[in-house]
Every structure is written in structure tokens, then in C-alpha cells.
Length: 128
Ligand SMILES: [Zn+2]
Image (cartoon, rainbow, N blue to C red; front, side, top):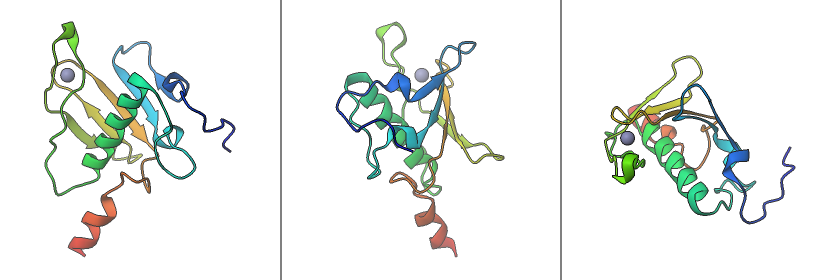
């Protein structure tokens, strides 16, 4: 399964997909960003910030009881967008989807279940 050694400075481009027809669309399979112990792989710089951002999106999405507080990380025209993200689920695949209503940053995160950022069991067990 894991061919890539968990060395330093992995390039995040190899772990995520981008659609050419939608400039700001990210497609992420969360396990691709993780080490065998479940923590984020040692990305550097921008890659690390992106990985942390996506992990935070999963944590917010799966925490059903809490309103979204996560803000857009993009800086169109070098000004922080900082708009509140809209986060929801794909009803068919259970993927986490997000988009920014202002700058169109958007994407899909699959395989987030049972990662460190999956809060769904916490919230589900409370209502049972
Ligand atoms: Zn934005």
C-alpha cells in the first residue's frame, strides 16, 4: 500500500488532484495526506498549510452540532478573502464538500472517516 517513504518535504501536488476546467477546485483523498500513524505527512510550507486547512474542514464538517467557523484561506488580489466557508456532505458518497461563496475556492474530501479529524462518532453517540 504505502510506497512512498514518510520522508520530509513531500510535494502535496502528488497527493491531491486538481480539475483543469474549474480553477479553484480541489479533490482530496484524505488518507493520501497521512502517515501510517494517522498524522499529517511532513509537507512543507504551502502544502502543510493546505493539509491543515483540509483537515480542519473535515473536523468542522463532522462536528454536526457546531456551526461552521472556518474561513476561506485564499487571498485573491493579495487581500485575505476570509469569508465563512459553506461546508456540507455529498449525500451519495459521504464526501465532505466545501466552497467559498465569494472567491469560488471549492473542493471535495473523501476518505475522511475514522481519521483523527472525524468527529462524527462524538456527535452521533450523544443523540443515541
Ligand atoms: Zn474565499
